[in-house]
Amino acid sequence: MGSILSLKIAVLIPDISDMNNVSISAVDLFCGVGGLTHGLERAGVSVSAGVDIEASCAFSFEANNAAAFVGADVATITPKEIEGLFAKEARFRLLAGCAPCQPFSTYSQSGRGKKYEDQWPLLLKFGSLVRAIKPDFVTMENVPQLTQHEVFELFMKSLKGYKVWWRVVDCGEYGVPQTRKRLVLLASRHGEGLELRPTHSDRVTVADAIAKMPAIAAGERDPDDPLHRSPRLSEVNLRRIRASVPGGTWRDWPVELQADCHRRGSGATYPSVYGRMHWKQPSPTVTTQCFGYGNGRFGHPEQDRAISLREAAMLQTFPRDYRFVPADAPIRFSHLGRLIGNAVPVRLGEVIGEALLRHAAAL
Image (cartoon, rainbow, N blue to C red; front, side):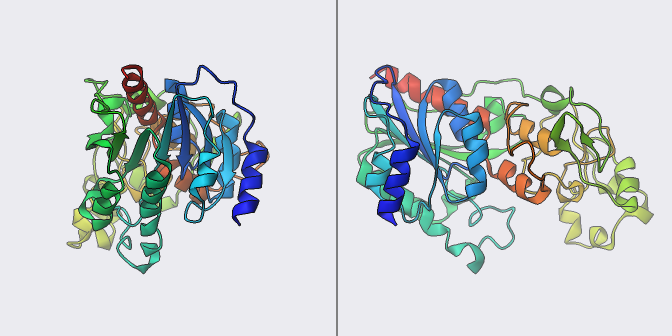
């Protein structure tokens, strides 16, 4: 397995030994469709490669970024193979690793069960790669609940010799138009000073992000953008969204539209499901189910539909022209919703990159 992957890496990564101006060379583990990589590149960090087990991410990652996609399981990749991905002449090396968050997320009701236990060691594998490679810098993004688990303490022990900064940050303070909270960790082998600084006192709103998108109906798509499409709604859900007000809840509906589960005690704790977003506020956290009107406050502020896949991506601060699938590929809501919802917001990646470059420049 190792020799096959090494050969693949040698083919994918171009000769970059003459990149004398590269300050930081990065490898992005669990790269997905490239949200973190795109943000790092926008900041000026040179990402040489992204590694992910999901082959369907390859098109999007390479179509929008200068880095190469390496289809491999991080659980079995070796430190030597990772080291071969960095630019040889770079002054500093960055290893980024946003391990799958399902084991820790409150959005996954089964997150503590057997289904996801095999993903817990991925964070520990990331830590073992840090110990072996000893990159100059490390960054990780994950859900806030990770800090409540023993695996986070074990990962922190992998960072012996680093100065570590971590916080649960409000992504809205960095220009992401969501109420998204995320754990961000930054570590440096070169002393103190590496940290994130909020960039926005005024929040970016849903209107700022998607107000200029063409109007479409539920079940329709924009002929100029295959991702700007929204699923069909049943007749009862069409009636429900017409009765919804921006920022409101299902409690605004007439009684005959309320489901039995809403009126039960357990349903009362989920008031934002079947809700509309508000133009003048940030959106809720964009999840893997963001395309479904009934999955959260994912109703469009004024059109009678859920937000489109493109709008979800833009709320994740992907550029409007970011390509997720080839032109002739089928669009599957569940698949692309998962890739978009799991991505690191591009703007957050950019802020992380800016912090790294500031720190590197001071050394």
